[in-house]
Image (tube, rainbow, N blue to C red; front, side):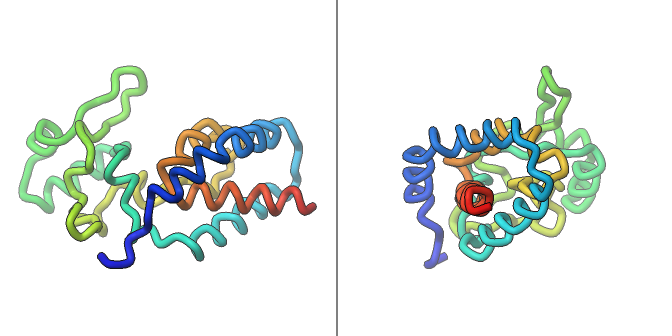
Length: 169
């Protein structure tokens, strides 16, 4: 993948801007912004114009998705495995949340050499919707977005765009 995103560039930018963006997000929680959903959608759209997820893969390299039992069953069947075989080979259950998670990173289905997901059509919903920016409970996810600023270039760009949009109003 010749045109791979330089994650280090975005990571460094995120660390430089983390205090400012974190303060912006914390203030956002306290404000009543009637069109926040509209602004968030616009910010996310702009982020996807700048960032091609399939040219990054940093989330697959450094994070682990949450799996639904139905997703595990479907992918296990596709791979000719039972649910238990799949689970025992690659997953664990987080004690504090009960979430089913990958046991290690990078993701077992991420082809590091090509930078692509090998089970893209059957990837967990958590992967398909990452970084979860356009949500009704956006304000409840501020800590997640703050934590992901340095992990996900799209999150960084979207939050930067959201700040520009809101500060221009």
